[in-house]
Image 1 (cartoon, rainbow, N blue to C red):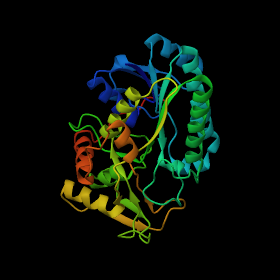
Image 2 (image 1 turned 90 degrees about the horizontal axis):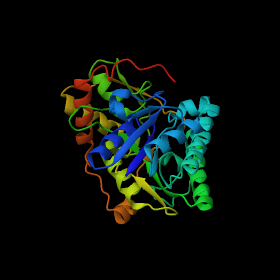
Image 3 (image 1 turned 90 degrees about the vertical axis):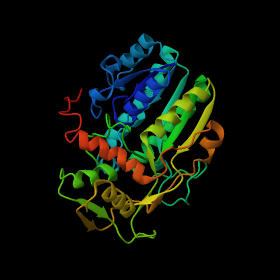
Image 4 (image 1 turned 180 degrees about the horizontal axis):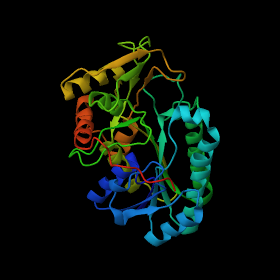
Amino acid sequence: MKLLLTGGAGYIGSACLRWLLKHGHDPIAFDDLSEGNPPSVPSDRLVVGDILDTNALTEALKKHRAEAVMHFAALAIVPDSVKDPDNYYRVNVIGTKSVLDAMRRAEVPRIVFSSTCATYGNRAEMPLTETTPQDPEHPYGTTKLAAERLIKDYAAAYGLGYAILRYFNAAGADPDGTYGEDRRHETHLIPLTLQAAAGLRPKLTVFGTDWPTRDGTCVRDYIHTEDLADAHQKAVEAIGPGDGRIYNVGSGHGATVLEVIRACEEVVGRPIPRDLAGRRPGDPPELVASPEKIASELGWSPRYTDIRAIVETAWRWLESHPDGYGPKPSRH
């Protein structure tokens, strides 16, 4: 299948592109390189462009003769969304509308959308199912929910087929250590912890030790990027025009912050310096998926079910790439 991946040079998008190449598909990345890394995708599979440029996106879809879109491109840092909601609504909502409009112009009938468990909010019962009420508590979650509804409305009116995948905490790196996570502004726990272990930052800060969890720190559901990529492949192969599906993509169990740190210490073989701080506003104590629906409908299940196995892949990448992919290109 010929596929166009918006944000396809980013952490998750590029992992999916590489996976799809290995599994018989013909993907191309469309990325403005504001967060993406060109070395993470083959050079002949990268189109530099902005999703807000509907004409350029339409041209890329037509040139590649795309049969489906995987829409990863988005802004995704919660505190930034609170400080600058204008930018988040522009990219995450208007940008999604631009993608859908380009698909209509190019007559591309299917989309797989990268959504998030942040659309559920912080007060839902665990584990989260696809029918859990959506009540996001910050602009990031709100804009991703708005994008979901845009897709549903376009599908109802214009016959698009769609799959909405609500991710939990993406983590890990390619098993051979060749490609991994290298973002301009890192906010994810595992790379932050491993960077502290490697001396690339002085220490890790743990926010909140008095949560109502088994050790007082937050619980999150970690999902390896290869398992995410497998879910995308299964979803795009399953949907047809007019077909709509929504799935949670998580492991079904969570690890606390301290459990993640201990797994990192076991992998690197030494203690990792850290400070304990108070809770951050807006953090939920626990986020864990129920992946039963995607398992029963698509036959998907995660291969990386142990947090240490995920950490091992991330550490293999960091050890071999202490400078990441190197200097970042200027923003387009």
